[in-house]
Length: 92
Image 1 (cartoon, one colour):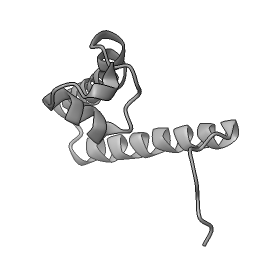
Image 2: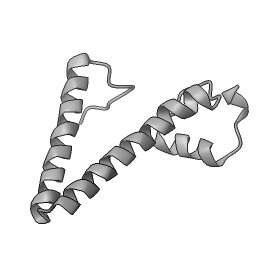
Image 3: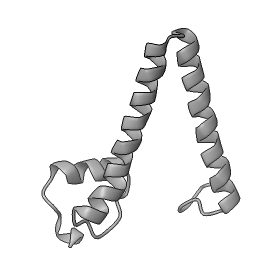
Image 4: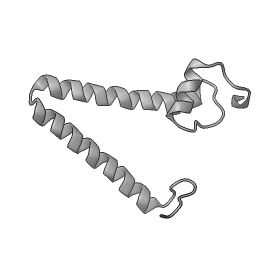
């Protein structure tokens, strides 16, 4: 098994990865709606997707650009830690 190092930087691989996320989201959403095919399910699913997208934007854009963070977050857990902890000495 090959050992992977570093970040994924190949533009084609990044586009494929993004496309796979979209496919997974469409399939999961379709299955949820097929399981409960009514307007309430569609609206709640749409609201949940919208809210999680806004939360992700808040963690990775708003906190960094408007809350004084000077370095990017290492991931979701790093971003959440910064919400609940005092700013670290590296953030200024």
